[in-house]
Image (cartoon, rainbow, N blue to C red; front, side, top):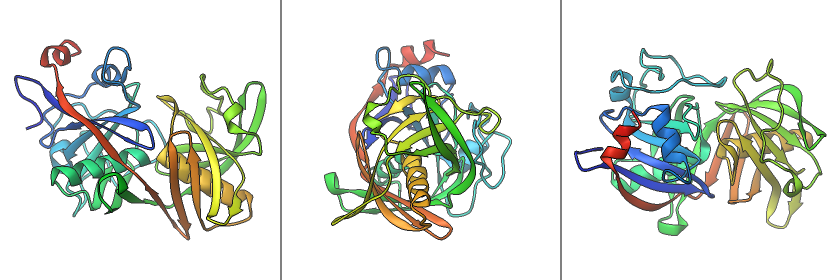
Length: 308
């Protein structure tokens, strides 16, 4: 059971230091409001996290009538049910109900889906194969074990959109819109990303990104003895700067390869939280990286209920 009179079960995990509160709720019994999500993610009054991952059976969530949030970007699933999530698809039992730290729902989270899959695997609930998200089904493969676990996620095609720009510290950075199930503006520049002030959201074109956008600052591709590499920092909508962003690394690699005149490649992405790897093929992208679970416990029931 996901909850009881004594408390509400949770786990804490991260993927390259992009951290999440995991709420097991297989039967969709939790009323996961925006206020509760924001409180959980607050690093002073809650557990602290970049987002919340509700682990729920897709069919149960679609028919539950409880709070499922509203998607805020351009990505969609294959159909939207009455509860605000895509209609369940055959073969995908579990749904990743992902929420940003501000309580808003998001279509997809690459680091989140790896932590989600790792949780399912460790719990004995599966984790391999197809998983549901607001961006549609994502297929997961898990190799290794313990600290050496690598979770690979088929992220689908990365759709390249219009060119645009953002401004940070009075400097304009050109970029390209890329949809990885959620919206990104990936800016490739030789500027050292470590010197940028990302304590405030970079500007964006509201006509192109009416629901906000994740903004990546990525260096050009560098070839080395170990393969191609880039460096990246990211500001995520609804969260702020994060130590890493899975979908952001996919967008960053697609943009960096495009800037190098290439359409395919396998590139390691160094983020402040660690290194991920992205494979870009014709019509498909795959994200590879670690996922760790670091704590398990119970939320106080009275605290949860007071946030109603």
